[in-house]
Image (cartoon, rainbow, N blue to C red; front, side, top):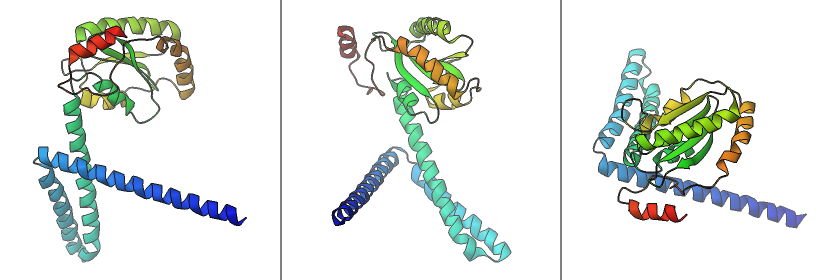
Length: 245
């Protein structure tokens, strides 16, 4: 009995220590991200400070009208801090997308970070030039997301849509080409584009479709980067590696 209690205390202490360590690591990562963004984004600090001061002054003035300025002042400060964090997060996100745009594997990275009921299969079709088509199963149906040369990925999209249509019947199929030209979807807007598609099927049908399409994903294909490649990556070397595989 005593041994069991001691073990339970040790487990609780270990869990508490692990949570503290994770919290410390998150704070360090946040601080590092802030420092990096601050060096590149000269408007970050003015916008964050301005949001805190603006919210504080606004709530204080409203409080003066009703004689409760000292009650509303802390609320104004808290809201300002929250707005500052929102501004920080959005500007960091914009910087990340700007750096990733145009790099092989960028769309796959965005899809892997989708929130919600999405079933993502990256690289269901690809070329040795690192063009790729990714498949997403969601409530809208089946969505193919292509990145790379528009001329090359169009044929890949057509092939995958034809193969998939044979297995999923009347389930809607969408296709997206990542890019900034007309008819394309910019990388930074990909998540928003997907979430705005109409809901055509339910979760049960998603499971059924995923099972049917699993055979298509089982075939081997070119190895693709799991995230955006550095801009100075040696493409020829990467292509030779893919060909060997």
